[in-house]
Image (cartoon, one colour):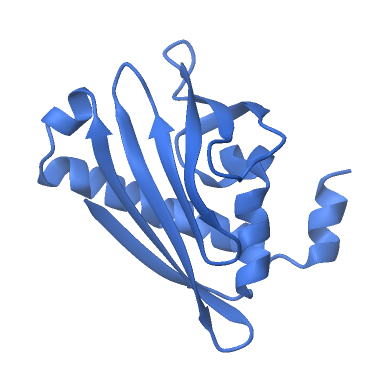
Length: 153
């Protein structure tokens, strides 16, 4: 299992706003290259985010499903990447004072070939990927809201 944490200089509601916008996942989740569709009810439990991962022409189409969602506190996903397998990703937000958030990501393979080869190399790869994922998430959440709105135009 890979566990990574980072303090983001934004309150939990701002960090969660990024998590709740499924269309931004390819901006901050390392390996996700394109979001194909996001269920209207995202991030309600059972809703799905349909993504493409990996470089063309080897990219894989799959979906991630919300297992648990507590706004501004937690998002737990089943992230698919078949035929390689699937992982459970648990993202927790912990307030740090009034203007910062400690974000913790725990990820572990749950099914498929990647689960069968669980070892320290897999954990290291997941760890490094999630360090970069948190860096990207922080960059988005820490941006001024005015700038984020201008980026979408």
